[in-house]
Amino acid sequence: MHKLFTARVIENRPVNHKNYLLTAQPLAATAAPLPGQFYMIETARSLDPLLKRPFSYFRRTPDTLQFLYALKGKGTALMSTLATGQEIRVIGPLGTGYPPPPKGTAPLLVAGGLGIASLFSFAETLSKKLCLLYGARCRSDFLMLDEVDKLGCEVVTCTDDFSFGKGGKVTDVVSDFLSSSPKKRYTLYACGPLPMLAAVSDTARRHKIRGFVSLEENMACGFGACLGCAVRTVRGYKRVCKEGPVFPIEEIVW
Amino acid sequence: MDLSVSIGRLNLKNPVMTASGTFGYGEEYTDFMDPSVLGGIIVKGISLKPMEGNPPPRICETPCGMLNAIGLQNVGLKNFLKEKLPYLRKFETKIIVNILGKSIQEYVKIAKALDGAGVDGIELNVSCPNVKKGGITFGTDQRSLSQLINSVRQAVPSATIITKLSPNVSSIPDFAKTAEDAGSDAISLINTIPALAIDPETWKPRLANVTGGLSGPAIKPIALRMVWEAAQAVQIPVIGVGGILNSSDAVEFLLAGASAVQVGTGNFVNPRATSEIVEGLSAYLQRKNIHSVSAIIGKLKTP
Ligand SMILES: Cc1cc2nc3c(=O)[nH]c(=O)nc-3n(C[C@H](O)[C@H](O)[C@H](O)COP(=O)(O)OP(=O)(O)OC[C@H]3O[C@@H](n4cnc5c(N)ncnc54)[C@H](O)[C@@H]3O)c2cc1C
Ligand SMILES: Cc1cc2nc3c(=O)[nH]c(=O)nc-3n(C[C@H](O)[C@H](O)[C@H](O)COP(=O)(O)O)c2cc1C
Ligand code: FES
Image (cartoon, each protein chain N blue to C red):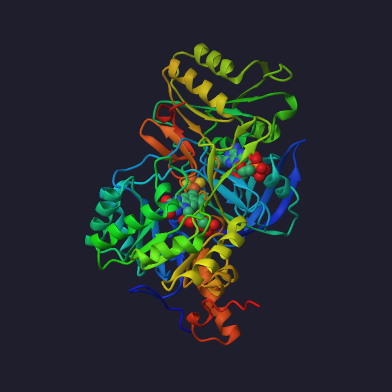
């Protein structure tokens, strides 16, 4: 199995005004990723950008990997110009995945915006008994809603600006959801912007449920060598790329 | 093809090493390459006591390079000897340990312990720009640099000592000479260059530590110039570091006068970089019909 491999771009298309879906085919045998793991992707063969960029995989098919990404800066802008047939170097799968829910608890997935990119593959592996709370700033920020529908699980959508689904912050929706089904025991899994993760973690604590969050930090290597991606935990600094990106909520010092 | 080079009493099977702080303790690279193909591994800087490092964000990318303010996070001498060194020993390569201290006594203590444990060499980090109380004063003050090297030399008379020079000085030849006179077996340069990156939207520095050390291809021309100057000033071997990504970069450093090279940021860009550089050097020499790598060291043709 090769952790550093070349992949051929099969398709790279916009899915809305600022997000793209990249489908790439590894040209060597690679390890099967666990939901929540990520890859370091060479966005351009250049000195600037120099470093690869970290991306969760959105979905895996028998011979391709799909990545859902937002245009952020230089690297993702160049990435969006990758053409079918082009070859890119990739490292992965990296990091830890989402651990399965402990016995007797139901999975509650909370995705904020692009957080769906990492939670989607996890939802696919769970039986339909999960619930997915999917929040975004506005209606046009939702990604892959058709695919999400096909999961066949309970999906609650919400928007900050009340333009789609329930109105209000996803954290309030989580709180309401937990209050409305007090007898059921849940394990929470959250991925999204940091303020959302902090708020959702707080909600989980208040409702006394366990859970996991997927964190982001700037990365140079992605495989544990540079110590650049440290986050503060109750047991000192840990590497997002190696001990994470998925951490138990109670470990993180917010 | 003879790729071997000598650094003082140390014979390296080839001139390619990893730069301190970029190769961990060797564990992270076995998924990509065999560390035994290397001339040497320079281990992440070790201090007497474990150090937890700086708050995040610790790194950011800048054009053709990156800034880091890791804050010298390391497991400390005791854990290194117990947990990391036995693992590193499994590779058929030279293990050189980069060390740092707050005082000469600390450097001496660490050097003695490592020498006793049989490491192949010690690299003195006197130039790390990140930690406020760190080695910066040793690396930028000729007198303290001289005292430091002298003390370590006396404490471990038979060890191979490499002094890693700071680029943060006005005259590299002066400091290179100081290191040689004080008993260093070799010098390595350059460490990262103190730098600052700013986010114009938030008006904040991009690193929590405000400043960080610049590394990568952006610093290569500066490193080449400094290696060239140092190589002319001293008789002891010079080890070139700074922005090396591939074997052509390595050849440039050898031509400038380096007897060996270290690859840092290049490992992040391509975790197989060092082993590809070893192969590339071989291919280069073959193409040029040169039988030994030592034949190109310092052969820069200046007018
Ligand atoms: C584990 C993990 C999984 C991720 N998954 C996804 C995903 O599925 N889809 C997606 O769109 N984005 C994802 N990201 C964020 C993505 O890596 C950044 O948006 C991207 O690196 C920005 O690169 P850029 O050159 O366009 O932006 P710039 O801002 O120009 O990048 C400059 C530097 O900052 C780093 N950087 C900037 N923002 C981030 C960030 N949020 N996280 C890490 N590094 C950052 C870049 O890697 C680069 O080195 C993930 C990040 C991590 C850590
Ligand atoms: C993330 C990171 C950590 C580093 N840690 C150390 C260290 O602990 N000790 C040291 O002497 N140099 C350290 N350095 C400096 C490198 O060893 C090297 O001198 C410098 O990065 C220039 O080489 P490069 O351009 O090939 O990276 C570090 C560099 C980076 C990028
Ligand atoms: S990105 Fe290098 S250690 Fe995590």
